[in-house]
Length: 362
Image (cartoon, rainbow, N blue to C red; front, side):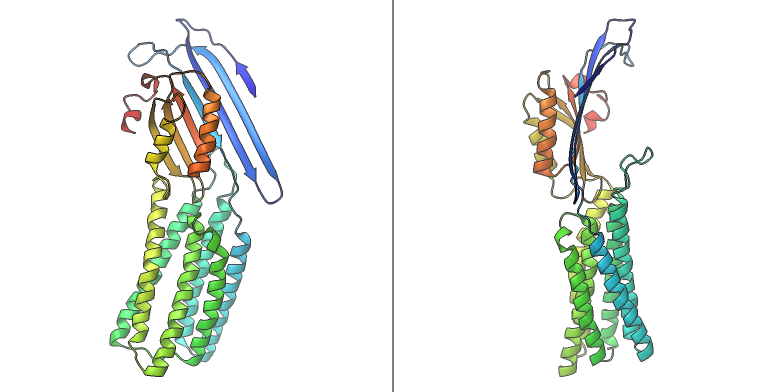
């Protein structure tokens, strides 16, 4: 702990502000484990005059808590997924061109669009780990939110194309899928399923990874539909099976994609991330020792994996401020997965610097 004290001459009676900052940072990677704990306390006397030329005694304590558990590195998964899908789509396009199969060429184009989705998610995952700068104080964490949203839009476009083609085929049935196309679709199922499994563990905790996962699941489902419809039509001659299966697949994928778009849009608009109840967070903060009120509470996603919080807590008692900030930062992380917290302690409601403005609207 380091403590610096300075005093500034004042023409009027001195007023007292106390500002304490606490940073708790924990950085974890595959080879090293570092724990950092810093406390900076500054006591200073100064004159404060508000817009009405009145003097008010007030105290503020600002606490900052950071818990950094480095996001899981999916670079290897992305590299394998991109390599597999580029190889498959290239082979599919070449074979389709040589065999004169428009269906294979079209499916190869669709697979290349999925490669674009994977590359986009991969790039965002890499950018989100870049260090902050003076200009971008949060770094490029939010790029993962933009990538998830863009991938959702790509999937919706693909779903629309599938549905449009399925509806058209009710009136103009396409030729029965040949044996070769069915075998190619089977290979597609294997590759897309294997790629999806690489991202399966992270789909619940990272919206960007979920976007990549849904791309692969959608491709595997479409390929499965080609196989099932092709076999049934070859055995029964029921041409309507193909568009029906396609529509069912499109509807199932739509619901997962819509949730991805909605959640990524919420994060882009700084809404409270799904899975966090702001009322429960407020109740927890209000129950901290000595806290009599909570206001100006904000919770938002810094990226698809990190959540930040700022809050003003009214705590008339001057004791145990540092301990309370440490406790709150730790428990907010453990209970709500909020890794970046900024807490301001106030001695009374009247000491809020934005009283009559932002605080009253929060």
